[in-house]
Length: 107
Image (cartoon, rainbow, N blue to C red; front, side, top):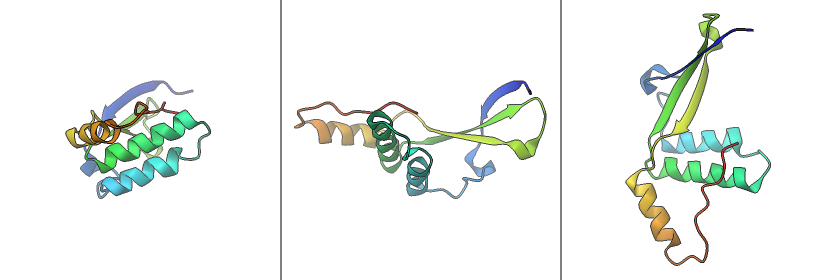
């Protein structure tokens, strides 16, 4: 078993995702996590998609192990702090709602 060394933020230009646009990241979250059971997980996927489409920055991290095998790179993608556009969208969407917006739970 190899020792986990951690992860570091990778400049998007140096990743396989360098040409991704917001809609591509939205589809990434749907494709990777959309089939996971549980309404709370599906709510999280919808929230991540909404964040991507409403201008929230995406962070890409590269995980590494002490084996030094660069062909075994693991890319980890997550959304950054919510954009102002996303926060406004949630506020506007929910101002007349009888429920609170559900960000869901990450799988």
